[in-house]
Amino acid sequence: MRTLRTFLGYENLRKNREAVYLTHKRIRDLLRQYPVLKASLEAYEAQRQTILEATGVSPIVVAHKDKAPSNPTARKAERLEELENRYRFTLQACQAIELALDGMDRETRKIIKLRYFEGMRVNEIARKLHYGRQTIERRLRRGEGIVYVMAQNFPEVARVLQADPPDSDEPYSLVSGRPS
Image (cartoon, rainbow, N blue to C red; front, side, top):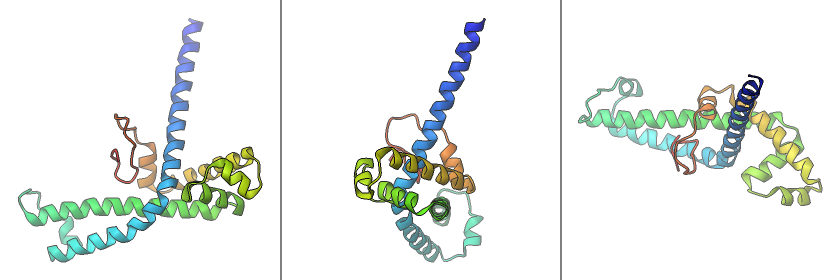
């Protein structure tokens, strides 16, 4: 009986570690996608305006759309709703990252930007800033933790970070929620 309890405890610990690893991976993915997310905010707004002008109705009327798939206004309204959801997530993700960056000390912020926004490797950052590799890795983990805490304040971002992974082995896009 004791062996079974030990085994069950190990299984729970292993599952918990996998969940933590997956969450950290999604935080790193979110940080890597930040420049793209920031650039896509304007594109979403332009697409939204194009759909609203083509439909010729206000967003309030479009929100109460007709469910008939043959209705062109309903199709445009569905497209607008999808754009609104993506825009909301993108905006919240950018706000979470910007708040997290504001909450970091100057050196951690610089390391996060070099690693995730400029794509430098840990060794390259260590040489450039004259720090040890372990110091860089520790500051990266600290910065990722701050981003995770800030992301929990935004429901759309927190939902994506906690979601189950897709079944396929394809890379997962945090923006669309589908394999990229």
